[in-house]
Length: 177
Length: 100
Image 1: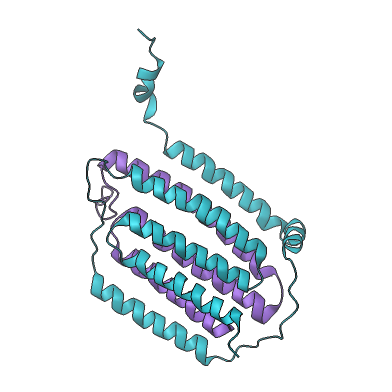
Image 2: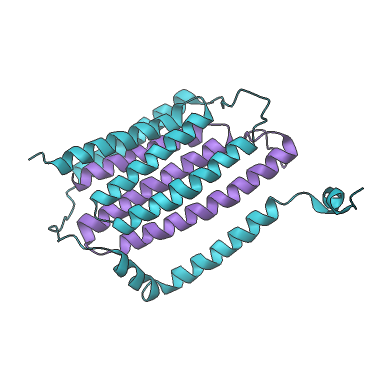
């Protein structure tokens, strides 16, 4: 019963979960960011196995290409270059581990013991056209709300990361001597 | 590959993200935990839409979650840069100036 799809599935699961575990536990934050890359890539592979091709491409483009680069920028900009120690010390290590393990046990027990009403598999279809059509018809309002949200986030991020008020910018405006 | 295995994978992702949020002190690392949790939710959405509903709406929800994650990451990183310029650190428990 174990076909090549199952083997690929288990490889992707191991990649995703081990990388996510490393994100949470590695002492250096740079290493965590690199592990996060592999975790995102593993999730993209899971999307492919779930026949969500558009979503897999979006995951690679937005998460790996955008968010991870942003995170790496933040890591490099928010640590002094002179300070070699980029690690972040942890706190509450054991209570957090107990909470997370209990939660994982409860969640996976619920997922395994419930009998889900699974429908029979359908033939694989490309999803991009359907997603585009639904975004323009049935989900038009959330689509427009998301565009307003993105605009607000853009303005907010630009405003927040601007240098301080007028006197900080004064040196730029002086005449060159 | 079946629905319950995917749900267990997503639970594992969620718990790793929760552990990162609870234990990390660096704000950027906390943000990584939030991204892991959003990914876990996305895997659930896509898995249920593939196995249970046979309708593509779950994937559209996942697209919106990705959009929200991108916006949230941009704003959070701008906040962290301001925090670093103000206090010289991005550790979340040192930013307590609003405390009375």
